[in-house]
Length: 459
Ligand code: HEC
Ligand code: HEC
Image (cartoon, rainbow, N blue to C red; front, side, top):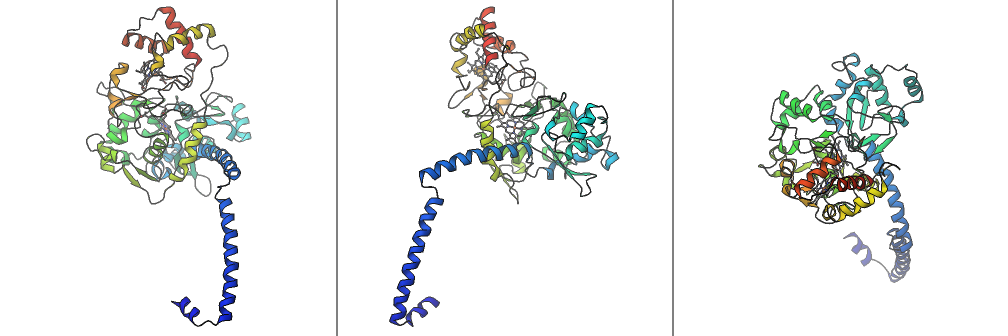
């Protein structure tokens, strides 16, 4: 309206100068356009450099997120469950005896030695730091040295006001370089000592969990305390199944979060989505972070009554602290390698014979396809395919078990400390081999089993 009036009233000279201005403006626009082209990285060199930079940046950011990001989960674990009050104890304004560093280590929590202040480290070495005093747990939390746990302190730094968790809690260990439980971080290693059930059960306010699951506090505690070290139940919040029909705990082992590149289905049962699906699921519905999560399958009232009632299939927190972190988090996990067996930890000539058995007579490689040791493609099997019960499989969308990518089977000190298969039902590799020998009627001789074992230890 305003523009057209202005034009109508213009003389010819004015029109000419307008043309000049228009030409200049076009030139500027063209220049800007070529600039935009460069910024848009349609230039091959710029794009390739951007890809390299992206890889470095995502690995770095993803590591920070995996180790330190709580996704706002303190609003649940601290503000609601008041776990921080159980940690600091009555002496520091919380409740109960508090969790001393000794108790924290007994519960399987780990300490990152690189974050422990020098004076504290020297004090521990000299026996001057009282590991029975919860005040020293607060000291470690303040230094951000407790793996997978972030303490939020009052302004004067004297009291914990909240506590949040990270991915590293259940998917990290330490190398014990300082002392057992205190060392350098091992990202992606399963937390096989962590008794997360006992930690949660110690929360002063379990009402959010009793409300969610529709059971009383004693039942919630009984379920949480049944898990034991190295285990967690990542589907309890969906189907509310506290125990298996045979009365055993419904929890599964914390799996490694390394060696996942090239693996399609993930978790013990698969069929949820890909790794980044699960990351979003955990950040939103397990860690109880603040974010957005969508999966209408969780609206199934029969299969997932708890999730359907709580509307977990369509979570929209007012502030999204998860989604923007998914790309880097996913990328970082894929960079985590499978730890190699130490030299001399297996007999290489027996292992070579075992490799042949794995690939032929024992038929292992039909499912565990080297070198990723799971099937490229839809790597899921019915429970009867591997000769086990269907309880855990039934809780997943496809009701199957995922061909576990065989990773670092040599390490039964840390990684496979709690056994093999989703619930650790086989405590040794030989038990696994004997199970397959029976189930597939392989008729492996004693020597063949030993050779196969040596090969498994070499993977
Ligand atoms: C409280 C313990 C706990 C925490 C915290 C946790 N996880 Fe897990 N994670 C598990 C368990 C248990 C499973 C196996 C679940 C199943 O099979 O049902 C699992 C499975 C996984 C898998 C699949 C691994 C595989 O072998 O396919 C990935 C990936 C993963 N978690 C990533 C994460 C990320 C990322 C975070 C942080 C956002 C996280 N986890 C936080 C316990 C935890
Ligand atoms: C039909 C497919 C199939 C065949 C054949 C098969 N596996 Fe498995 N394997 C699986 C599945 C599925 C799992 C996961 C079981 C679970 O999570 O409870 C698994 C799990 C394992 C595990 C446990 C891994 C872990 O991290 O806990 C080992 C070890 C293993 N298999 C070794 C073998 C060996 C050795 C053979 C040959 C004798 C073999 N498998 C043959 C499908 C197969």
